[in-house]
Length: 250
Image (cartoon, rainbow, N blue to C red; front, side):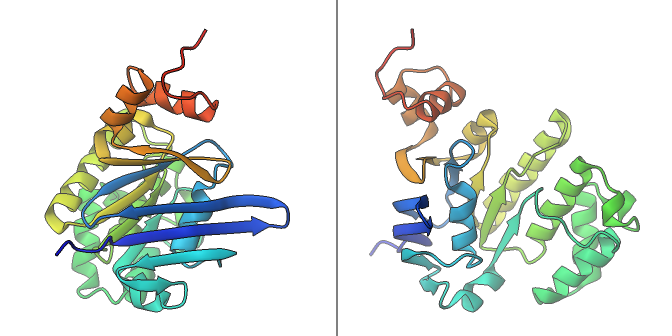
C-alpha cells in the first residue's frame, strides 16, 4: 500500500476581502521529495507557506501534514518541521549563538552545544557566533537562518529563498549542505525561489502559481520540454507572462 503524501493540500483558499491571495489550490508532496513553489511577486507563495506553518488561517480548504490537520493540530507537527527565510529577522540584540540556543531549546534539541558546533562548522558561521545578530550582513543572516532551520533535524523543511544574498560560491556550498541533509535524513523540502538554476538543481517537482492559482506542475525537465524552452528561467518567464505551452514568443 502506497504511503500517503507527507503534505496534502485540498481546495486551499485565503482571501483578504476582494483579494484572493490563494484561490483554490490542490497539491500533494511525497516523503523525501524536493518541491519548488514558484511564481512572481504576489503569486501566493508566501501566503501558502504561512498557512502550511499554521501562521495564517485559511479562508477555506484543508491542509494535512504528517497525517495531521493543520492548523487544528499544528502543535503535533511543528516540532517535526522548520522554516528558513532571509526576510524574517531574529532578535537583533542577541548574539548568533544566543539566538540559536533559544530556538534549540524551543525545539527540544538535545546536546545543544554539540548541535551548534556542528552547524557552525557546516555553515561556516562559527566566526560570528558571538556577534549580535543585528550586526550581520544580509548573506550572513541567510546562513544563520539556515542553521536555525536545521537545528531540530526536521522531517519537513520549508525554505523561502534559501540562498538569497549569498555569493555564488557560498550559495553552492549551502545547496550542497541541503542536498546532503536530505539524502541522509530522507527529509521533504519545499522551497520558494526566484533562482531557476537552483530549482533545476535541487527539485524533482515544481508547482507554479500565478494570481493565487496553480497554472503548471511537473518535474523541471518535463516543464522545459512541455514549453519548448531551454531552461526553467525561460519557462518561468512564459508562465509569469501567461504564455501557454507550445506558444512561440515573437
